[in-house]
Image (cartoon, rainbow over all chains, first blue to last red; front, side, top):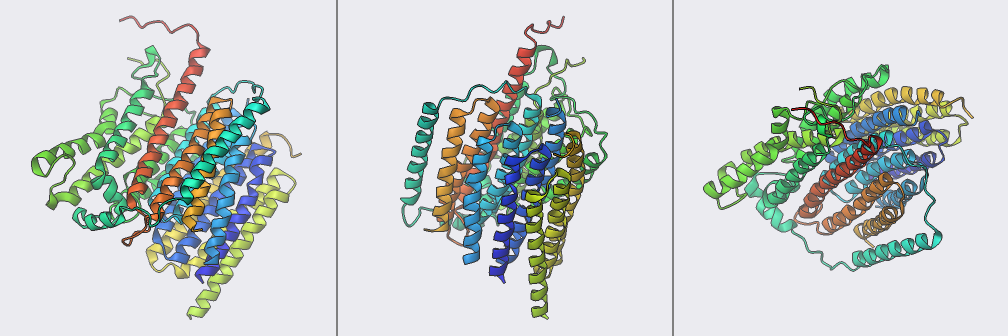
Length: 87
Length: 312
Length: 97
Length: 104
């Protein structure tokens, strides 16, 4: 079971990282934000899978921390875009 | 454990790729987007290295707060028209130099002595005396407390340095640019809903830090992130920098830490030594004060220097 | 009973993984920003949601399970708010190419 | 090769990439960004030392881990100082005439 969860974690990570191509290609800043958002939720999924596979409770705390931080960074990004890229 | 190797392989390829993306992107915003993703992935790497304490710090400080600081600066900085990129000889030379550094480090990593030198057994042996369960907290607050003290002082000095940039008339005013109150419903709602959860989680991290991964830095930086979020949404204003309460909050942690350290001369064996019976309560007290001071200092480091003339 | 629970975990986690992959494909292949946003929210909400659902039987304690659900709730909340902003930005940056 | 060595090589690569950016980026903000990429690599090298020193029931040597935690926070303080210097310089360029002295 642990092995299965780890393979799933690798799949999620790989797929999310392919999505990062959008950070480079854009074409809009909105697309780039989406890719980062996807990396955020993908990393959380990977951490939760790791936590379950290894029975490591600390990984869940790290996942919660990432969830807060990703939300925080996305908001800052949105506000920064509104101020900066507008002109 | 082929599954674990698969995961490691993906991470090992992805992190340099995203660093490269951040370096090579033409505009600054995509570079910053890649940097935030880099911070998130490094947190995963730290988990794989068996260091959840560092993973928490890297996620909160390295990815989150640093990313937000840089995004805020990018929004305010007028980027100069792109200068002509340096010619290819210079680029080639730099690339060779960097390749050399990487190669040197790689050789050093591969040639590390076996068995690896470690202080883990000593830490394990002494940890019982601190009554803590988390070895990293033991190192931070007992065995190498002087490092942590100096590091807390560095934060205070950085705050003073940034305040020192205030223009003549603005000294004593509120730091940072005015954030317009968001009319936008969804983000304002998030800025109101997230901080209560984040504050509980930040205090939780600081509290469990004695026995589980977490601690003053991790908890403090989550608390700071929540205040910064509310500030960005225009829900709160930073206090004036001549406010005595604010200044006391910034120095409370390091000052208490130093006092405890000095008290060690009288009641224990020397500087930064804790009396045996009181070790854990003293450490928890210091950690609580440090959490508060670190949170306030991080907020002030992101907010910046006072810009507008202070009204007397 | 434990076999059934394991089977449930496997299926839910597989489903979550599928939605992540599908969301990424959508993000890469869909022609315009708004439909890409649609794909992203599926990965965020359903992908992570199914994975959390699958891991719940393995959580061990009620507190552990609550933490899993909290992580998902945070992502849902942030995703909902940020998607609004992204959509508005996409609209402001001009019609889709 | 152990997992720790593999991540050590990753750290070495990140240091090289970051250094390239610090040397060649034209915009100061991009340089600060590259400095942070470089820092991530150096911290990772510490993490590898910590991982190799696992023992006594710990998943890593706690001493380098603690040092990295303080290092991350100090790197943030340095970054904040640099970023605000940059913003202050721009503000100073915008108003070449120094603001009048407040009358005491």
